[in-house]
Length: 442
Image (cartoon, rainbow, N blue to C red; front, side):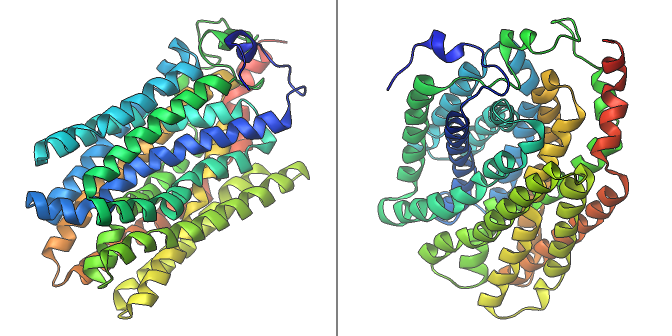
Protein backbone atom coordinates (compact mmCIF):
# COMPACT_ATOMS: atom_id res chain seq x y z
CA UNK A 1 0.00 0.00 0.00
CA UNK A 2 1.39 3.39 -0.95
CA UNK A 3 0.79 6.82 0.51
CA UNK A 4 1.13 10.28 -0.86
CA UNK A 5 4.07 12.36 0.26
CA UNK A 6 1.76 14.93 1.75
CA UNK A 7 0.01 12.42 3.98
CA UNK A 8 3.29 10.90 5.05
CA UNK A 9 4.68 14.25 6.12
CA UNK A 10 1.55 15.40 7.96
CA UNK A 11 2.46 16.12 11.63
CA UNK A 12 1.33 13.59 14.23
CA UNK A 13 0.24 14.70 17.70
CA UNK A 14 2.22 13.35 20.66
CA UNK A 15 0.34 10.41 22.15
CA UNK A 16 -1.80 9.93 19.03
CA UNK A 17 0.80 8.05 17.00
CA UNK A 18 0.17 4.47 15.90
CA UNK A 19 2.48 2.19 17.86
CA UNK A 20 2.36 -0.40 15.06
CA UNK A 21 3.56 2.26 12.63
CA UNK A 22 6.16 3.50 15.10
CA UNK A 23 7.71 0.05 15.42
CA UNK A 24 7.37 -0.70 11.71
CA UNK A 25 9.31 2.43 10.77
CA UNK A 26 11.83 1.76 13.52
CA UNK A 27 12.38 -1.66 11.92
CA UNK A 28 13.00 0.04 8.56
CA UNK A 29 15.65 2.25 10.18
CA UNK A 30 17.23 -0.82 11.78
CA UNK A 31 17.34 -2.47 8.35
CA UNK A 32 19.31 0.46 6.94
CA UNK A 33 21.68 0.25 9.90
CA UNK A 34 22.17 -3.44 9.11
CA UNK A 35 23.21 -2.42 5.59
CA UNK A 36 25.45 0.25 7.11
CA UNK A 37 27.28 -2.28 9.27
CA UNK A 38 27.44 -4.84 6.47
CA UNK A 39 29.26 -2.21 4.39
CA UNK A 40 31.73 -1.82 7.25
CA UNK A 41 32.07 -5.54 7.92
CA UNK A 42 32.66 -6.54 4.31
CA UNK A 43 36.30 -5.42 4.54
CA UNK A 44 36.87 -8.01 7.26
CA UNK A 45 35.13 -10.68 5.16
CA UNK A 46 37.17 -10.03 2.01
CA UNK A 47 40.43 -9.00 3.74
CA UNK A 48 42.37 -12.22 3.10
CA UNK A 49 41.42 -12.84 -0.56
CA UNK A 50 41.84 -9.12 -1.26
CA UNK A 51 45.27 -9.10 0.41
CA UNK A 52 46.32 -12.15 -1.60
CA UNK A 53 45.19 -10.65 -4.92
CA UNK A 54 46.71 -7.21 -4.31
CA UNK A 55 49.72 -8.32 -2.26
CA UNK A 56 48.80 -6.32 0.84
CA UNK A 57 50.31 -6.66 4.32
CA UNK A 58 48.35 -6.77 7.58
CA UNK A 59 49.40 -3.20 8.39
CA UNK A 60 48.09 -1.99 5.00
CA UNK A 61 44.70 -3.64 5.59
CA UNK A 62 44.69 -2.14 9.08
CA UNK A 63 45.55 1.29 7.66
CA UNK A 64 42.56 1.10 5.30
CA UNK A 65 40.34 0.11 8.21
CA UNK A 66 41.58 3.00 10.33
CA UNK A 67 41.42 5.66 7.60
CA UNK A 68 37.80 4.67 6.98
CA UNK A 69 37.11 5.92 10.49
CA UNK A 70 38.95 9.18 9.79
CA UNK A 71 36.36 10.26 7.23
CA UNK A 72 33.65 8.53 9.27
CA UNK A 73 34.55 10.81 12.19
CA UNK A 74 34.55 13.90 9.97
CA UNK A 75 31.21 12.93 8.45
CA UNK A 76 29.63 12.59 11.88
CA UNK A 77 29.93 16.32 12.49
CA UNK A 78 27.62 16.97 9.50
CA UNK A 79 24.63 15.16 11.02
CA UNK A 80 23.24 18.33 12.57
CA UNK A 81 23.77 20.29 9.35
CA UNK A 82 21.93 17.69 7.25
CA UNK A 83 19.14 17.60 9.82
CA UNK A 84 18.64 21.35 9.40
CA UNK A 85 19.05 21.50 5.61
CA UNK A 86 16.71 18.71 4.57
CA UNK A 87 14.15 16.29 5.90
CA UNK A 88 15.25 12.95 7.29
CA UNK A 89 13.57 11.27 4.32
CA UNK A 90 15.95 12.78 1.76
CA UNK A 91 19.03 12.92 3.97
CA UNK A 92 19.03 9.15 4.45
CA UNK A 93 18.31 8.50 0.76
CA UNK A 94 21.31 10.66 -0.14
CA UNK A 95 23.56 8.79 2.29
CA UNK A 96 22.35 5.29 1.36
CA UNK A 97 22.89 5.94 -2.36
CA UNK A 98 26.38 7.25 -1.61
CA UNK A 99 27.19 4.00 0.20
CA UNK A 100 26.03 1.97 -2.79
CA UNK A 101 28.16 4.02 -5.17
CA UNK A 102 31.21 3.71 -2.88
CA UNK A 103 31.14 -0.10 -3.22
CA UNK A 104 31.65 -0.11 -6.99
CA UNK A 105 35.05 1.45 -7.86
CA UNK A 106 36.95 -1.48 -6.34
CA UNK A 107 34.89 -3.88 -8.45
CA UNK A 108 35.92 -2.07 -11.64
CA UNK A 109 39.60 -1.34 -10.86
CA UNK A 110 41.09 -3.24 -7.93
CA UNK A 111 44.17 -1.62 -6.40
CA UNK A 112 45.32 -0.41 -3.00
CA UNK A 113 44.69 3.21 -3.99
CA UNK A 114 41.14 2.48 -5.19
CA UNK A 115 40.47 0.41 -2.06
CA UNK A 116 41.62 3.29 0.11
CA UNK A 117 39.61 5.88 -1.86
CA UNK A 118 36.39 3.86 -1.82
CA UNK A 119 36.62 3.25 1.93
CA UNK A 120 37.31 6.95 2.57
CA UNK A 121 34.20 7.87 0.56
CA UNK A 122 32.17 5.23 2.37
CA UNK A 123 33.33 6.54 5.74
CA UNK A 124 32.38 10.13 4.88
CA UNK A 125 28.90 9.07 3.75
CA UNK A 126 28.31 6.79 6.72
CA UNK A 127 29.51 9.32 9.30
CA UNK A 128 26.22 11.26 9.71
CA UNK A 129 23.99 8.20 9.43
CA UNK A 130 24.01 6.92 13.01
CA UNK A 131 22.85 10.21 14.52
CA UNK A 132 20.15 10.60 11.86
CA UNK A 133 18.95 7.02 12.29
CA UNK A 134 18.69 7.48 16.05
CA UNK A 135 16.91 10.81 15.56
CA UNK A 136 14.41 9.15 13.22
CA UNK A 137 13.72 6.36 15.69
CA UNK A 138 13.50 8.74 18.65
CA UNK A 139 10.94 10.82 16.73
CA UNK A 140 8.51 7.92 17.24
CA UNK A 141 9.33 7.12 20.89
CA UNK A 142 9.08 9.15 24.10
CA UNK A 143 12.38 9.82 25.96
CA UNK A 144 11.67 7.30 28.75
CA UNK A 145 11.02 4.54 26.18
CA UNK A 146 14.06 4.93 23.93
CA UNK A 147 16.14 2.12 25.39
CA UNK A 148 14.65 -0.63 23.23
CA UNK A 149 14.72 1.39 19.96
CA UNK A 150 18.35 2.27 20.77
CA UNK A 151 19.14 -1.39 21.42
CA UNK A 152 17.58 -2.44 18.13
CA UNK A 153 19.63 0.15 16.26
CA UNK A 154 22.82 -0.78 18.08
CA UNK A 155 21.91 -4.42 17.51
CA UNK A 156 22.04 -3.80 13.76
CA UNK A 157 25.78 -4.40 14.00
CA UNK A 158 25.07 -7.79 15.54
CA UNK A 159 22.34 -8.60 13.01
CA UNK A 160 24.73 -7.73 10.17
CA UNK A 161 27.33 -10.13 11.53
CA UNK A 162 24.83 -12.85 12.44
CA UNK A 163 22.75 -12.83 9.25
CA UNK A 164 24.68 -10.92 6.59
CA UNK A 165 28.33 -11.78 7.28
CA UNK A 166 27.92 -15.54 6.76
CA UNK A 167 26.06 -14.83 3.51
CA UNK A 168 28.83 -12.49 2.39
CA UNK A 169 31.41 -15.11 3.34
CA UNK A 170 29.55 -17.69 1.22
CA UNK A 171 29.33 -15.28 -1.72
CA UNK A 172 33.03 -14.44 -1.37
CA UNK A 173 34.12 -18.09 -1.26
CA UNK A 174 31.75 -19.18 -4.05
CA UNK A 175 31.75 -16.25 -6.49
CA UNK A 176 34.64 -14.02 -5.38
CA UNK A 177 34.96 -10.90 -3.27
CA UNK A 178 33.71 -8.56 -6.03
CA UNK A 179 30.24 -10.13 -5.92
CA UNK A 180 30.02 -9.38 -2.19
CA UNK A 181 30.46 -5.66 -2.93
CA UNK A 182 27.95 -5.72 -5.79
CA UNK A 183 25.34 -7.40 -3.56
CA UNK A 184 25.69 -4.69 -0.91
CA UNK A 185 25.33 -1.97 -3.53
CA UNK A 186 22.09 -3.47 -4.85
CA UNK A 187 20.65 -3.88 -1.33
CA UNK A 188 21.24 -0.19 -0.60
CA UNK A 189 19.29 0.89 -3.69
CA UNK A 190 16.38 -1.44 -2.91
CA UNK A 191 16.15 -0.03 0.63
CA UNK A 192 15.86 3.52 -0.79
CA UNK A 193 12.84 2.54 -2.89
CA UNK A 194 11.04 1.08 0.13
CA UNK A 195 11.97 4.05 2.33
CA UNK A 196 10.60 6.67 -0.06
CA UNK A 197 7.31 4.77 -0.20
CA UNK A 198 6.53 4.45 3.51
CA UNK A 199 8.54 6.84 5.72
CA UNK A 200 7.11 9.67 7.83
CA UNK A 201 8.49 11.35 10.95
CA UNK A 202 7.03 10.88 14.39
CA UNK A 203 5.78 13.58 16.78
CA UNK A 204 8.64 13.73 19.28
CA UNK A 205 11.39 15.15 17.01
CA UNK A 206 11.11 16.81 13.60
CA UNK A 207 13.92 17.34 11.07
CA UNK A 208 14.57 19.95 8.40
CA UNK A 209 12.09 22.81 8.23
CA UNK A 210 9.59 20.79 10.24
CA UNK A 211 11.85 21.16 13.26
CA UNK A 212 10.69 24.75 13.67
CA UNK A 213 7.31 23.47 14.88
CA UNK A 214 8.66 21.35 17.71
CA UNK A 215 10.40 23.93 19.89
CA UNK A 216 8.43 26.91 21.07
CA UNK A 217 11.09 27.99 23.52
CA UNK A 218 13.58 29.18 20.94
CA UNK A 219 13.85 31.08 17.71
CA UNK A 220 13.66 28.68 14.78
CA UNK A 221 17.08 29.69 13.51
CA UNK A 222 18.96 29.28 16.80
CA UNK A 223 19.69 26.29 19.03
CA UNK A 224 17.73 26.02 22.27
CA UNK A 225 20.94 26.15 24.34
CA UNK A 226 24.60 26.82 23.42
CA UNK A 227 26.27 23.71 22.02
CA UNK A 228 29.26 24.22 24.30
CA UNK A 229 27.04 23.80 27.36
CA UNK A 230 26.04 20.32 26.17
CA UNK A 231 29.52 19.23 25.13
CA UNK A 232 31.17 20.35 28.39
CA UNK A 233 28.96 18.24 30.65
CA UNK A 234 30.64 15.42 32.53
CA UNK A 235 28.08 12.95 31.14
CA UNK A 236 28.93 13.88 27.54
CA UNK A 237 32.72 13.87 28.07
CA UNK A 238 32.98 10.64 30.08
CA UNK A 239 30.32 8.96 27.96
CA UNK A 240 32.19 9.86 24.76
CA UNK A 241 35.43 8.40 26.15
CA UNK A 242 33.64 5.20 27.11
CA UNK A 243 31.91 4.63 23.78
CA UNK A 244 35.14 5.58 21.96
CA UNK A 245 37.05 2.85 23.81
CA UNK A 246 34.36 0.24 23.14
CA UNK A 247 34.05 1.32 19.50
CA UNK A 248 37.77 0.65 19.13
CA UNK A 249 36.95 -2.96 20.01
CA UNK A 250 34.05 -2.95 17.52
CA UNK A 251 36.29 -1.57 14.76
CA UNK A 252 38.91 -4.25 15.36
CA UNK A 253 36.20 -6.93 15.31
CA UNK A 254 34.83 -5.54 12.03
CA UNK A 255 38.27 -5.32 10.42
CA UNK A 256 40.17 -8.23 11.91
CA UNK A 257 37.99 -10.87 13.57
CA UNK A 258 37.60 -13.17 10.53
CA UNK A 259 41.36 -12.91 9.93
CA UNK A 260 42.01 -13.74 13.61
CA UNK A 261 39.81 -16.82 13.38
CA UNK A 262 41.34 -17.89 10.03
CA UNK A 263 45.03 -16.99 10.29
CA UNK A 264 45.41 -16.83 14.06
CA UNK A 265 43.27 -19.75 15.21
CA UNK A 266 43.37 -22.01 12.15
CA UNK A 267 39.72 -22.11 11.06
CA UNK A 268 38.76 -22.22 7.38
CA UNK A 269 37.72 -19.05 5.54
CA UNK A 270 34.07 -20.08 5.45
CA UNK A 271 34.15 -21.07 9.13
CA UNK A 272 35.80 -17.78 10.06
CA UNK A 273 33.18 -15.77 8.16
CA UNK A 274 30.36 -17.70 9.80
CA UNK A 275 31.91 -17.44 13.29
CA UNK A 276 32.00 -13.68 12.80
CA UNK A 277 28.46 -13.89 14.18
CA UNK A 278 29.36 -15.36 17.58
CA UNK A 279 30.32 -12.11 19.39
CA UNK A 280 27.31 -10.43 17.83
CA UNK A 281 24.89 -13.05 19.13
CA UNK A 282 26.16 -12.46 22.65
CA UNK A 283 26.07 -8.69 22.15
CA UNK A 284 22.55 -8.67 20.71
CA UNK A 285 21.11 -10.77 23.56
CA UNK A 286 22.68 -8.61 26.27
CA UNK A 287 21.78 -5.33 24.52
CA UNK A 288 18.12 -6.28 24.17
CA UNK A 289 17.86 -7.60 27.72
CA UNK A 290 19.52 -4.58 29.31
CA UNK A 291 17.48 -2.12 27.24
CA UNK A 292 14.07 -3.75 27.74
CA UNK A 293 14.65 -4.15 31.47
CA UNK A 294 16.09 -0.63 31.64
CA UNK A 295 13.03 0.97 30.00
CA UNK A 296 10.75 -0.83 32.46
CA UNK A 297 12.86 0.28 35.42
CA UNK A 298 12.79 3.90 34.23
CA UNK A 299 8.99 3.81 33.96
CA UNK A 300 8.90 2.46 37.52
CA UNK A 301 11.08 5.25 38.88
CA UNK A 302 14.70 4.12 38.59
CA UNK A 303 17.24 6.81 37.74
CA UNK A 304 18.73 7.20 34.29
CA UNK A 305 22.18 7.15 35.86
CA UNK A 306 21.58 3.66 37.27
CA UNK A 307 20.00 2.23 34.10
CA UNK A 308 21.94 4.03 31.35
CA UNK A 309 25.34 4.61 32.95
CA UNK A 310 26.12 2.21 35.78
CA UNK A 311 24.74 -0.94 34.11
CA UNK A 312 26.66 -0.57 30.80
CA UNK A 313 29.83 0.65 32.54
CA UNK A 314 29.88 -2.46 34.74
CA UNK A 315 29.43 -4.55 31.60
CA UNK A 316 32.51 -2.91 30.07
CA UNK A 317 34.50 -3.65 33.24
CA UNK A 318 33.53 -7.32 32.90
CA UNK A 319 34.62 -7.21 29.24
CA UNK A 320 38.00 -5.77 30.22
CA UNK A 321 38.58 -8.46 32.82
CA UNK A 322 37.72 -11.22 30.33
CA UNK A 323 39.92 -9.89 27.51
CA UNK A 324 42.90 -9.49 29.83
CA UNK A 325 43.07 -13.28 30.01
CA UNK A 326 43.08 -13.85 26.23
CA UNK A 327 46.89 -14.09 25.64
CA UNK A 328 47.12 -16.98 28.12
CA UNK A 329 44.52 -19.08 26.25
CA UNK A 330 45.84 -21.69 23.80
CA UNK A 331 42.62 -23.49 22.88
CA UNK A 332 41.03 -21.95 19.73
CA UNK A 333 37.43 -22.65 20.76
CA UNK A 334 38.00 -21.09 24.19
CA UNK A 335 39.60 -18.02 22.59
CA UNK A 336 36.53 -17.60 20.38
CA UNK A 337 34.30 -17.89 23.47
CA UNK A 338 36.33 -15.29 25.42
CA UNK A 339 36.22 -12.73 22.59
CA UNK A 340 32.52 -13.34 22.04
CA UNK A 341 31.49 -13.00 25.69
CA UNK A 342 33.73 -9.98 26.26
CA UNK A 343 32.29 -8.23 23.23
CA UNK A 344 28.78 -9.07 24.37
CA UNK A 345 29.19 -7.45 27.77
CA UNK A 346 30.63 -4.29 26.23
CA UNK A 347 28.01 -3.90 23.50
CA UNK A 348 25.20 -2.67 25.77
CA UNK A 349 27.08 0.60 26.24
CA UNK A 350 25.88 1.93 22.86
CA UNK A 351 22.07 1.94 23.14
CA UNK A 352 22.04 2.92 26.79
CA UNK A 353 24.54 5.77 26.54
CA UNK A 354 22.98 7.08 23.32
CA UNK A 355 19.67 7.25 25.18
CA UNK A 356 21.37 9.02 28.10
CA UNK A 357 22.93 11.62 25.81
CA UNK A 358 19.57 12.27 24.12
CA UNK A 359 18.18 13.17 27.55
CA UNK A 360 20.55 16.01 28.30
CA UNK A 361 19.88 18.07 25.13
CA UNK A 362 16.70 19.80 23.88
CA UNK A 363 14.78 17.72 21.26
CA UNK A 364 15.68 20.07 18.41
CA UNK A 365 19.39 19.49 19.07
CA UNK A 366 19.24 15.69 19.26
CA UNK A 367 20.73 15.04 15.81
CA UNK A 368 23.54 17.57 16.27
CA UNK A 369 24.38 16.34 19.77
CA UNK A 370 24.39 12.67 18.77
CA UNK A 371 26.33 13.54 15.62
CA UNK A 372 29.21 15.01 17.63
CA UNK A 373 28.98 12.27 20.27
CA UNK A 374 29.14 9.49 17.68
CA UNK A 375 31.86 11.28 15.70
CA UNK A 376 34.04 11.33 18.82
CA UNK A 377 33.15 7.68 19.36
CA UNK A 378 34.49 6.87 15.89
CA UNK A 379 37.97 8.10 16.88
CA UNK A 380 38.41 4.70 18.51
CA UNK A 381 37.88 3.13 15.10
CA UNK A 382 40.42 5.50 13.58
CA UNK A 383 43.25 4.27 15.80
CA UNK A 384 42.54 0.63 16.67
CA UNK A 385 42.51 -1.29 13.34
CA UNK A 386 45.85 0.13 12.17
CA UNK A 387 47.42 -0.39 15.61
CA UNK A 388 46.19 -3.98 15.55
CA UNK A 389 47.78 -4.53 12.13
CA UNK A 390 51.10 -3.22 13.44
CA UNK A 391 50.90 -5.45 16.52
CA UNK A 392 50.12 -8.52 14.41
CA UNK A 393 52.99 -7.82 11.97
CA UNK A 394 55.43 -7.41 14.88
CA UNK A 395 54.23 -10.41 16.93
CA UNK A 396 55.90 -13.83 16.99
CA UNK A 397 52.70 -15.39 15.63
CA UNK A 398 49.42 -13.93 14.30
CA UNK A 399 47.51 -15.55 17.19
CA UNK A 400 49.76 -13.87 19.76
CA UNK A 401 49.43 -10.51 18.00
CA UNK A 402 45.64 -10.58 17.87
CA UNK A 403 45.39 -11.72 21.50
CA UNK A 404 47.67 -8.89 22.65
CA UNK A 405 45.62 -6.34 20.71
CA UNK A 406 42.34 -7.54 22.26
CA UNK A 407 43.94 -7.48 25.72
CA UNK A 408 45.01 -3.85 25.27
CA UNK A 409 41.54 -2.89 24.05
CA UNK A 410 39.94 -4.46 27.12
CA UNK A 411 42.27 -2.60 29.48
CA UNK A 412 41.61 0.81 27.92
CA UNK A 413 37.85 0.22 27.92
CA UNK A 414 37.90 -0.75 31.60
CA UNK A 415 39.69 2.50 32.55
CA UNK A 416 37.11 4.55 30.61
CA UNK A 417 34.28 2.64 32.33
CA UNK A 418 35.61 3.69 35.72
CA UNK A 419 35.65 7.34 34.58
CA UNK A 420 32.01 7.10 33.46
CA UNK A 421 31.00 5.53 36.77
CA UNK A 422 32.52 8.47 38.61
CA UNK A 423 31.50 11.35 36.32
CA UNK A 424 28.35 10.60 34.29
CA UNK A 425 24.91 11.62 35.58
CA UNK A 426 22.22 12.39 32.93
CA UNK A 427 19.64 13.80 35.38
CA UNK A 428 22.13 16.27 36.83
CA UNK A 429 23.44 17.38 33.46
CA UNK A 430 19.97 17.72 31.94
CA UNK A 431 19.23 20.33 34.59
CA UNK A 432 22.55 22.08 33.95
CA UNK A 433 22.04 22.16 30.18
CA UNK A 434 18.32 22.85 29.89
CA UNK A 435 17.57 24.73 33.06
CA UNK A 436 18.16 28.25 31.68
CA UNK A 437 16.13 27.65 28.50
CA UNK A 438 13.23 26.21 30.51
CA UNK A 439 13.22 29.16 32.92
CA UNK A 440 13.28 31.63 30.03
CA UNK A 441 9.88 30.38 28.81
CA UNK A 442 8.12 30.92 32.11
